[in-house]
Image 1 (cartoon, one colour):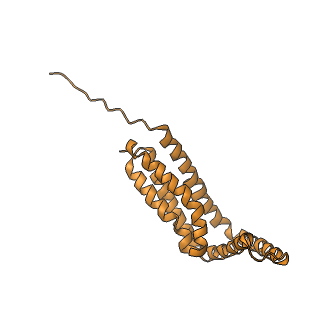
Image 2: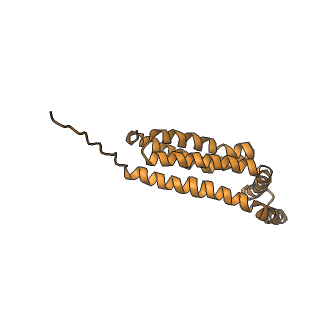
Image 3: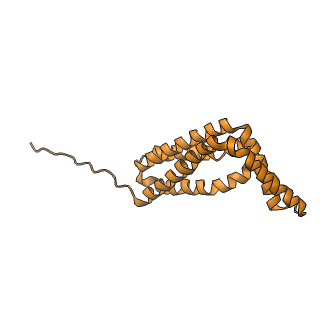
Length: 167
């Protein structure tokens, strides 16, 4: 009888998936997780200075007769965002950390070419985008969502196109 051994070669990860995973690691881990933890650790120290700077900017715009327009609205919205963040700092931080960890786990699984990583990453990031809406409010959260949504949806689409390489 002949001994037949089956050689299993691991799937080779496409370079594009590797690049996406590295960029996601930077985004979810660096900006998502570390920035959230840094903000939590330093918020009490920086909050009074930030409020003072924004209020001073608003006063200067009002003194110059520019008490309307996009820059004025951005300053007022920045002040509201700071106040809402102060009110909800702990639950907002906990929620952001949770979604960042789920996102990172999804990235790790996709790096290992596991499809379930894509689904975890997608769900985590879609819900993560809603955090500002919930904690800061829909009027200002929608502005923040606009900046976040484009990149998030782009990455989800790019990963989805590469699902064929995952098990």
